[in-house]
Image (tube, rainbow, N blue to C red; front, top):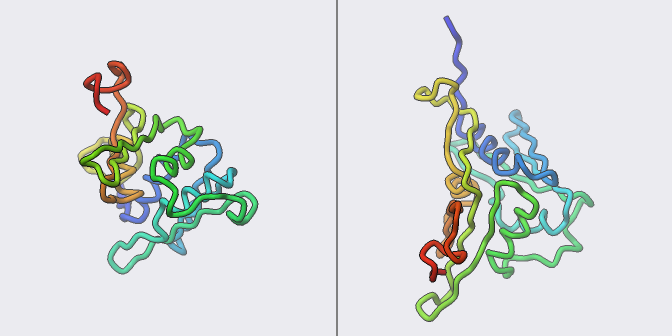
Length: 178
């Protein structure tokens, strides 16, 4: 009889993070399963600083805490001019610069949008990573980058993750928005 190994949620979160940065040559994701820790080794200081601001320090799964550590190439983010006051669209642009999964990030400001609405747009592509999904022949989860980003970065007020379209009309879905 075939033996099945179920994938715990902290392993699935690592798989999601690894999938987000699979096409980014400047980010290397390592999982220390024994210590429940994911480390992102980042070659670019600004990208590392942006990821440090965007990613939570840990995820909680019942009594398991999965720690997340961003490790810049030079060992610290002292040279980066990025902090929590940096606009979200700029943070995501820095965090995903050169990443083949990412399309763009944009904040829309207006009279009714006091703080603005930030859209983080990923390429139109199906992403697969291993889980214990019994409804999939290979045990994979098939999803979109926007769904993974929502799990990895979390939800914030006026922040939305979405998927790019193939042929934008005048650069906007309806030709006038945003």
